[in-house]
Image (cartoon, rainbow, N blue to C red):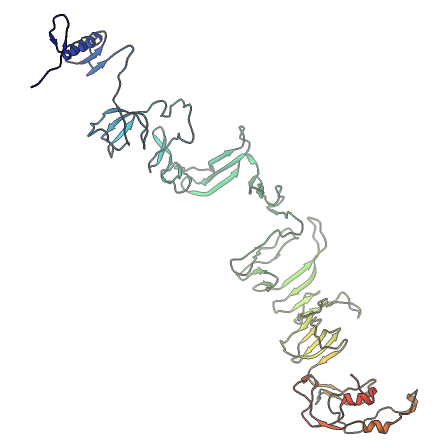
Length: 549
């Protein structure tokens, strides 16, 4: 059994259904506010009864109200959700900001790939022709949000592009560098591709461009404009290199007075350091003919004929080489001259092409010929100064070295070798070699020495009389074919005192036979023969005057 709920009117107690009444009341009020006019050309919604415009399918007009588009919460520009299968050009208003959508009007675009929501631009989200206000450089920008290039045009011609890699091209759509500027016209003079102007009057600045002959570019161009100097430098040295309008180049100076003027910052510091492309430093100095200046020239009057002509200088621990194909080398000096006046040079050293070297002369006849300052005996022309320390240094001050391994004759002073004649003929003077076993102001001679003979058979052979004032010390046997005479004349003696108990003292001495320890003391040159004699320590107890320690 079903029951309908109704409301009763108290007067007649008859049931009344409220829903039909409510609908009637709603439509009565609604149509009293708006008037719908439907014609064949379109529909008009207004309050004044005007017909729809012929060009409009729907014509809505009001003086104080508008049309509210459906509000939808989109989730991204490429997702149709929450609408299912939206039709092309469907208009909605997004109410939330999420992913790549922000609040605003969007329409569905099925011409795009993929389909997507397109946002209608407003004055708050677009770049205006007359400028924008309230922009934020951190969030507002002109550019793309995908991996495509950004182009700029004038007269509908592409003038500049920023590609997807960030390279900027002016006059080209395919820049290979961070900035590429391309001029497509062939010009007939030096033209500036880029100019940096220092002031409004354009009296100073830098220009970069090229030279062309009308068809082919012939060279690059970088210059200071208006005749000003051109500088190259760093942060700490902004004017490290200067190029003046007259072509003079200065390194370390801003006022070069020659085609190349190199100035040292500190006196005594190097100004030019040339390094080759190998482990050896090379410097090539070449002239093509005689200099017209007559002074201050290098290689004056020399013309190159081969790549072998070079100056080669390396570190002090390597050789220094000056090499020419032919001709001689002369080193000359001159007094300070006056510009424009000829001066005479004085020969200091000459190296002939046959290898002869002359010092103080120009025509050496031997490998080394030295001419002194004068021809008298006191004229000093060679002075050799050895190592002042004289310790552990085998470099000769002056010498002829035949690469001998042993000394022949050496003269020493304070244990420092002064003069050596080696066993193979080499000669060293002022060698500075110090030895611990050399006597002071003495000589060490290896090999036989002959005095009065050219064929000595012993370490020292004297043919003639030998006078010794002092003691002769022998570590082995002294052999004589004749008697050895010692002075014992009373005329040469004084303070004579007779020995007491001489026989008893002699009886205290013990004669012995023995062999020398030749291997333990090779410097003594002991023999291997059996010896007869006394023990020095025992003799010293009896007659200490006879023993030298």
